[in-house]
Length: 220
Figure 1 (tube, rainbow, N blue to C red):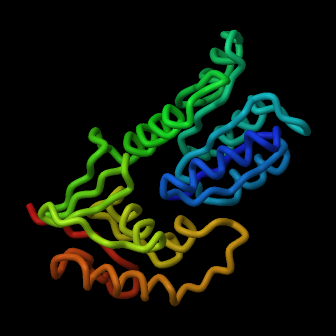
Figure 2: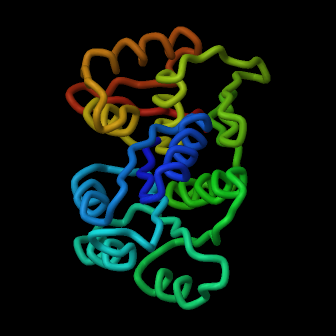
C-alpha cells in the first residue's frame, strides 16, 4: 500500500516517512502544495497524510483540486491543535479524517489503517482469506496460525491483494502500489514476488487471470 506524506517541516516530514515505512507501507513525500497536487493527481495513492499549512499552495486548495478532478483516495489532514476552523474547512473540502498536532505516530498509523480498511470495505484490523490472515496492526501474515516469513516486498504484494480480495489486480497496478515514486521499477519482479508467495501460501489462493493479472481467490 502506498502513502503520500505532505509536510513542509523537514524534521516532521522525515519522521512521518520513517513511521509510515516502518509500518509496512511505501511512502512518497512532498514539501509544498504544488508538488503535492501534481503527485496526488498523477500517482495512485492508497491514502494521503496532508498538512494544511503548505507553501506554494495551501492544503485546502490542494484537496479541493484533487476532489474536483475525481481523485478519491482517503485523505488524513494535519491541523493545528486549536484550529477548529481548519478541521471544518478540511472536512468540507473532502478530507476523510483529521489529526491535531502534536500527535503520536501510533494514532496516525491507526487512523491510516482505518481509512484504508474502510476504502476496501473491511471492518476489522485483521483481514482473512480462508486460512490466511493478515494483521494490519503488526504487518504480519499467518496461515492457520503459523506465521509467514515474508520480505518487505512480498508483504506489500500480499497486503494489496488482501485489501482487494476477489478483484483482478494487474501487474502494473501492483507495481504502482508497492514501489515509491523514485524507485527503479521492474515489472518482472512482480512475477518473482507472486511465485515466492505461492510457495508460502495454500495452493490456488493466488490465481492468474490470463492477460489481466492476479486475483486472491478466497474459499467460501
